[in-house]
Length: 61
Image 1 (cartoon, rainbow, N blue to C red):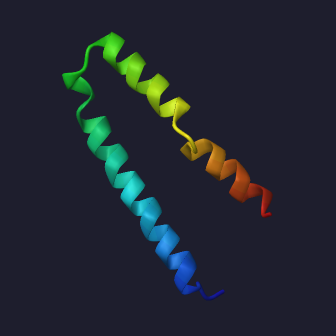
Image 2 (cartoon, rainbow, N blue to C red; image 1 turned 60 degrees about the horizontal axis):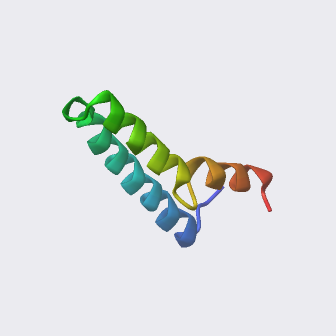
Image 3 (cartoon, helix red, strand yellow; image 1 turned 90 degrees about the vertical axis):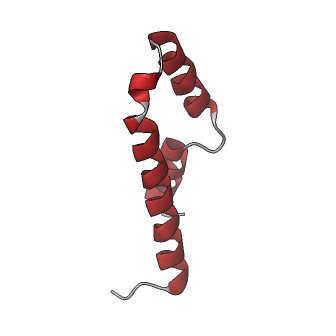
């Protein structure tokens, strides 16, 4: 199946998100345990968040 230009563009966005998450992950050692918890809470509350978008996409609607 061929990918449309729009799909390729969105997949590039996902690559950008993954690169950002790798940078965050590589900096964990700079944060205290409490700061890590605060960052996790902040990420979970982000709207929209990554997991919510995945759920919407999986519905195929």
